[in-house]
Amino acid sequence: MHHPARRKPARKPAIAAAPTPAATGSPPPGAAVNAEVGELKNPVTSILGKRVQSPQGEDLGRVVDLLADGEGRVRVAIIDFGGFLGVGTRRIAVDWPLLHFDPANGEQPVRLDVPREKLQSAPEYKDASRPRVLMPAPGALMAAPGEPTSAAAPPAPK
Amino acid sequence: MNMNAAARGLDWFNMFVANIQTGFGPFIAVYLSGQSWSQTAIGVALSIGTVSSMASQVPAGALVDAIPSKTRVAAFSVLVFTASALMFAIYPIPLFVYLAEILHGISSCTLGPAIAAISLLIAGRFGMGLRLGRNARYAAIGNGMGAALMGACGQYVSERAVFYLTAALTLPALLALIPVRHSATQHLDPQPRAASEKGLRSLRVLIDRRLLLFCACAMLFTFANAPMLMLISGTLTARGSNPSLLIAACIVLPQIIVALASPEVGRVAEARGRRIVLTIGFLMLPLRALFLATTANPLLLVALQLFDGVAGACFGIMVPLIVSDLTARSGHFNLSLGAVGFAIGIGSTLSTPAAGWLADHWGMRPAFYGLALVGAAAVLLVVFFMPETRPEREPELATDGRDRLLPPLPPSPASVPPLSPRPPLVEQPQRASKTGS
Image (cartoon, rainbow over all chains, first blue to last red):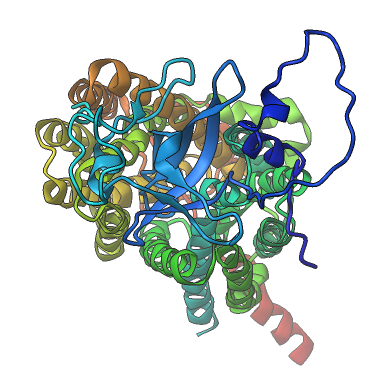
């Protein structure tokens, strides 16, 4: 009866493991890596579709896409925010380091260290080639939640 | 008495169907995101749904025309909804989701015309306006309740549960059809459909000038109307202090207006004619768009949904009513309704990206001005070109229903209540007296 419908489970550990040396040591183009099956030391978690919460536990939406740079590092998470029954949702690009995971606790939502209002008024994500990303303001070293991180988000377009 | 039970059954049926359809709305995108679907795959699934419903509008209408028992069509369509909802709930993998989208798209296209046809059977051609007012009232109640119920279900139970709830709601919908079936099938004499074997002949009904004009009106109306909620709710999400609640209010408020106003709209359409109702409803659009262009105040945005309620009540009733005026006796009522549905589908499919593009490149205000312009064009089309279609009351001698289509200008030269089983009732006593003597 209950098929949990997990697609492509193999890809997600690869994304989570991207920063480890094994994955970033780029092989020469065209050459195959001598691959073998192993186990990861640290717990990992599936990300696509995960709920996102503010540090206060408010529901902020869910992760619907990830953007990677040329080195395969995940740089941006796309968060589907707000709406009612799917009407009026807004997709917002968020700098990857703003998200915090708890892989040992798989069902735990992702924590996003941005006040709700900042996320709300951030520009809507449209174009993967040059997204406008909600990121920590220069010098704001992961400011305490609720504290205004000025200049992080330009005001929403009229 | 039987007819009363049938009419009430149809009320409930309209309500539950509207309930069910809420589950198949944009919420599907939210649900599939939660099932780790990629945005591309979700886009594909939704497009499959749109394409299959667009493609099946006209054929589904023709199919409903050809099947004598409209209640059976309605029941079958609802059963297909059950299957689709269960596929979403149990196996949200691409194959089943795509299949469910296709099935839902097609059966929506058979269900709408079937409800209209049942209404025509129950109410007759001259009670159609009042009947459609009732349909719209109960559908609006169902929509509003559905949004509240499923919003709460998605929030507090689980997103998957929304589809189980949708599937469960098909059961009372089917039950509501039982009294309808008893009354509606009795009167069901296969309409004047002798000539319909020739496919080309049946398509001729679609080139009625008034029907084409109305298709154009409906397309423009939908083009201007469909993206407004999207634009408003986008603004609310960006600015409101409690966006989800405000968006919910934007969805529910027009339904309350429709529920309150629909019976009166139906009455006015019967008493004063269709053109006046159509004009009032269409006028709401450019007005609403102009107001929306001038404000971004969240509460005002919600309040302006009042216009949407009035427009929705008028449009929702006028579509089946005008089509029944034009084609009720041709035997191609549902085919024609499908054609209008197709025009509406084109309008809504084209307008959302167009309005989104305008909003992205030029801003909200020009987007609303653009929609106001299209809405105004629709009003002009109604005022200057759309003829009155209300049938004349005097029951004259029945002429051939097919010849009626040739002179395009007079609304209908002869009108006869097509569905009342008069002749058998007249003959019955004679036969009885013969056997008695």
